[in-house]
Image 1 (spheres, rainbow, N blue to C red):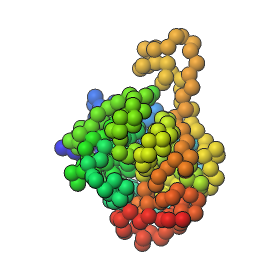
Image 2: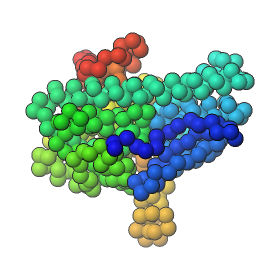
Image 3: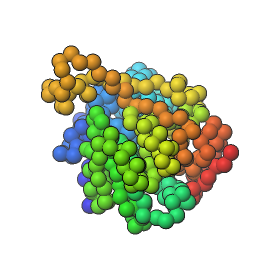
Image 4: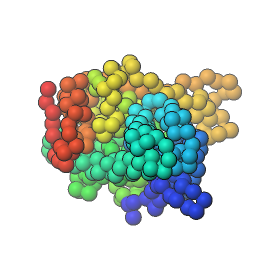
Length: 364
């Protein structure tokens, strides 16, 4: 069965009060276990520990977090601040928090009606993400057929971009899945994605459940795959896309873009328009989260792989400049070439335009 037994996130209302229930991604692939968040501090801790992760899902979680605060009678303004600041690079988190907070305020900013409005907005965002995932899958598959008319794709991906980060089948992984269902996926190359192995633990887990032909490789082995001509395209997600088209994504993405450029391989980013941050001028203005050094110096908590006292450089993300990005696939169409004008155009498209599933190339 391809679908996860447990959803990545769900709202529940047991007798003791509403809660947000998360699939604890730190325990995958060994165990599908749920983590119950009864308050905002618990959700913030889950976000920071990566129990819940991935840009689109963080937006959904942030919106539900505001609703949780509202329904339980907490200070919604303070809850929204704590949630939005939990991880600074992923713009979707602040976006989802802002939508639910604004709905709460528009409904009076207090009481049951305002709480219901916040929850309704979180549920609307959840539905929109699922619908957008399906549109990105169709648009991305169309783009692949244009760029690689021979079919039989050998695709390389990094980190995790599937159902675990989405209301449906994800972003980049949704495109891979569409290719697989169309009988056009020859091989999925899965970067292990150090230091927390989201590729090996999570993407390979999803690929196995989908019955895809896949193989996990060390991040450092990607270059040899390109050199051997074994990669037809790279598909990744994004945590923030600046106004100039610079893409912040999981650390290790930028080297793949350099390799793809050198070898003439398409480098494709798949992300919803909520990941585009026109208020951030360029890649240099993106705040990059740095995580604890122990994630690098220990193979698991308490088991060191480096000398005691070793310093570590552990940025969670890197930034790929727009000149290395072939196209950005969104739920509103494909942006190519990647530049400020085309990004502005796709972000200003009305909701009625979102019903299309074609590639929708936007040429400058």
